[in-house]
Length: 232
Length: 232
DNA sequence: ATTTTTACCGAACGAACGTTCGGTAAATCT
DNA sequence: AGATTTACCGAACGTTCGTTCGGTAAAAAT
Image (cartoon, rainbow over all chains, first blue to last red; front, side):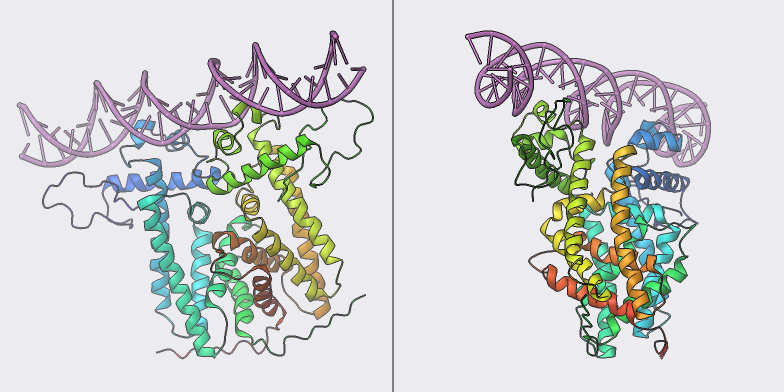
């Protein structure tokens, strides 16, 4: 919840002595304006989730927020910025939580498990925004696109570091890039199939996926090639 | 290549004694009309790939095909049907190839490897259409959507069967559903990152991903919990 | 008390959208 | 040869799109 990011134009005039940090992404402090924007962003995330960015219209957003079309533009400059604010807040938040939790362990395997756990926790608790983040990752262009891509690269980099640590610690050989991207596939694909009434919760899924992935990566290649090949 | 599927309205009048099977998805036989439709579908797949289904316009398609806007509608009824034909042909073809290749082995592990290999072969050779298939899988509604969803379920079912076979053969215990969906995540996510100038080809990737996945699934859970937990 | 800023809204703008209509010239069938 | 079907096209239709303009009434600042 609480999609605040505000930077769109909280302070529009260069007046001196305004609030020091104009509420970046937290819910407690923040002007009434920031809180209203956060509400709108939550609604926007939901319609982007349901209809996709291109398929959703500002009139849809106007309807679900109960605000007029023109009134919406009081809080942001364009539809594209809506998507940017949602993606930025989502990425920033998941990464903050990750850093906090990673500080709790320095066992290489455990840290990879923390990464998976954190990702799935956040994914299943904020599935609308997370689908928007993963599904619309080529939608933003130019500056906004570059900014999101840079956060994404940072997130990827953290995971790659975890993986290289693991590889060195265990004295193994595998492609870090392929390992990370395979793992990302497993944990991001979730938005296409997870049904809370059928599937396990984040903790169980994180353990199961962690098992599959870590055994796959950790076990040596030798003694593995036992081609039974008992053809009919 | 060769996106033919034609069924849109190849035969519009109930005349007797027409071609027995009006060219379903192959390139050799097929009327000039079918071949022209296939060309258009290939262009359409490319623009859907680049801009997404909602983001791509019929005018874009008109421009890249060199055909007039009205002329396009000579070959199909609507934009939605374009997407349907692309998805149906892609799914059908990948599944035909899969069945052929699965007939070559009845070793449970080998068959899972064949599944992965086939998927990646097709994916990397037809990345435009495959991204359209995976990325726009909630776009089609009603009848067309249901038809595609049913083919998808069949494909999922094949993979699930392979997985259950493997589990029984090896006497293991794991969730087939989670295994299949994790595997799908790994192999479908590829469209978000694969760069032919950097990454390995389909054969190598299939082996590497197969290694990660199969080791992960095959290795027993025991002797695995060795929680080092050497905290700082 | 008065100015200024905030928080909206109704109505409209021009552009773009998917689709259709009425036509034409060539190919194909009878 | 004449009739019909095919393969298109220019122009438009009605709708929806993101965005903006000109306003208003309340709150905040001076």
